[in-house]
Image (tube, rainbow, N blue to C red; front, side):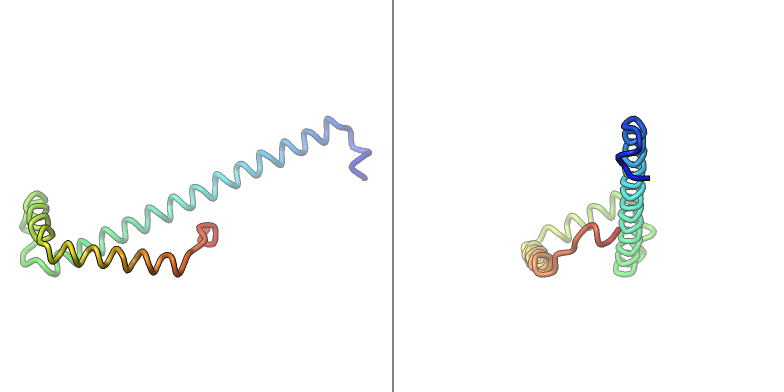
Length: 106
């Protein structure tokens, strides 16, 4: 049936239904994005914890405060700060050369 033959109230109701469906679709996509970000963070934390434990002898026997102090002291040297700055600059350059569209990952 042509759209012009459908009563205006029905057309409005159909459009409102479509809007609700699109809003729900957006909500679902945002939940997927949040879930993926949370999974990526969890994986990163696990991997970095494993790296730390592989490099620090008996790291599992140290308290969190002791590990924090160890890292704070190790990262406070000038050479390490310079190295970190070069890593950040390199990563920034790589990110600008290879931009990713956020919507492509959904």
